[in-house]
Amino acid sequence: MRILLLFSFIALGNSGHLMAQSLCGQTAYLTYLEMLYPGFNEMAENTFFTALRESKIKTKKRQDTVFKVNVVFHIVYNNAQQNIDDSLVYSQLRVINDAFRRTNADTINTRDIFKPFAADAGIEFVMATQDPDGNPSNGIIRKETFRGTFGSNPTSLSAADLVKNGNVGSAPWDTDKYLNIWICDLSISGVDALLGYAYPPTGSANWTGNNSFASSERQGVVCHYKVVGENNPSSLATGSKTMVHEVGHYLGLRHIWGDGGCAVDDFMDDTPLARRASNGCNKGVNTCNEIIGGQFPDMLENYMDYSNEVCQNLFTNDQVAQMRTNMWMFRRGIYEEQIPLPEVIDAVLDETGVYPNPVVEGKLTIYLNSVDANATYDMTLYNLLGQPIFVWNLEAVPNQQIIGFLGLQGAYIYKIRQDGEQITTGKLLIGQ
Image (cartoon, rainbow, N blue to C red; front, side):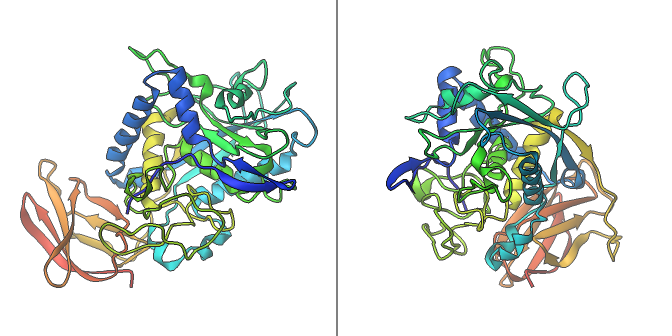
């Protein structure tokens, strides 16, 4: 499977007429940043592919560590309606945490075909308890502004980004230590247009050397006040999942469709091809044929789509790996690490092999006995006709995980080799 990137407009009825609504301004924001800082897009692309390569490395410590991110919300308002209640902020934080830990109740709505790909990101978000000067804080800043809206027609991200300016909006807290989220009015003449955008990972928090575009003051997420929190009286179709989507961008994810149609890739192997952004919640849609392997409908459940919030309920294994890699490579200062106690398993392997068997939740742990740090290891998966299906290069460590099996189901044969010589083989059941 593959994926794509697009800045899309959806027709939205309002007051008896139609108005273009850009749910997410990510592509437009990247264009704006490239205009401000020539070379920005190249840096962002290089960062994305660096993280993608590193995300393929799976070690137990990397996967088990829980990242706790310090968050500060800036509520920038011009009237009482924009000055949303604390309760909406707290409920929004719950929505984000449920989404990133996959503890949301609507995971039961994930279609069976996509359940093997759905993953817990192991990322949690907590309200900042101290400001940058060490003073106590509840993690919420309120700033009144003279601007009635930060939206503009035509959509201009330069106008929206003024929310981060201390003279007009609210100046960020140290973006190397906090995830800054700005909440403001992004409407245009009273019509809801842009709903949110985010600053992606870009090499490092503050670039040095020949790069003249250090822009740490822009790092963070911006969201329209009408899509913040559960039961927001002004809520729109994408609702509180909008901020989940934008935090996904902040952590390096792209949309799951693209402006090049079915041929454009988001480089996540476990997200199906899609010709365009979804609108609504029509689960019968399949806009692209997969190039190889099984055929999949459009993944409306994915937070990085434009489907309604009642449809969205998952990040995939590859998306999780990409976000987690961006955390420890490019956003190291904004979180604290927690390493949970080791999981107690029913069986302890004293020889090279795999666990569990059958595979559950798309995760397989590989154990290597008497590891030679100088040796090379790999595992090949074969169908019952003896034809190779996949080959994984393994690390020279006692245990590691493979996550996601690309829709495979049934019985297979695995063989693990050291320096090209088979050291063990066995039958492996997947998805049973």
